[in-house]
Length: 209
Ligand SMILES: N[C@@H](CCC(=O)N[C@@H](CS)C(=O)NCC(=O)O)C(=O)O
Image (cartoon, rainbow, N blue to C red; front, side):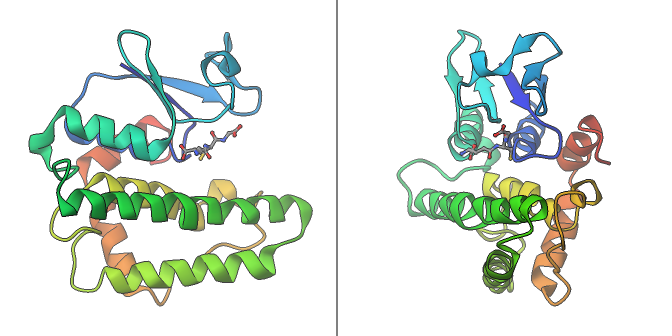
């Protein structure tokens, strides 16, 4: 398999999941400024929509969309517990989280990114995203991870997104970072996830450690 990724982007989520599972996946870095892979392949030939993550199977089949990709990966080794078994209530709970993360958090960051460029939207977009994070903080009360005691692909996704709130390398885009100061549960969760060897390995490989 191959994973097309942009360092520090949402593709960090499947990258962490691959490390958790110990899967043999080649990492192909996309240059987001010119949309090429290794300076040669036109990334629009891989994904006409131009975005990562893309997972390519050995037979050439390609998957888009992070939430689908991480579930596909987790299902390669169900015993890992990274995704609860299909058809169970917990699996739908996981999908509930992945949908929330993709629409309410992931895409909640986008207006901030453009706000840094255009000087607009911050006043409405930032408080909304901060309110979502405050809600996540409450959900983490008394829990180690989003679904309970077990780390799942939803934690990998939230980790990849949450790094954007304060990332130094994004300050050229953001006018202001997201502040997590009062969110004790979120902070403790972030520290726990950060310590995982799969996460450290992914951050190192993407040049973010
Ligand atoms: N709906 C997609 C969105 C992925 C996405 O937003 N990817 C960003 C990085 S986080 C990207 O590749 N942006 C580069 C571009 O669109 O040119 C998913 O959830 O996987």
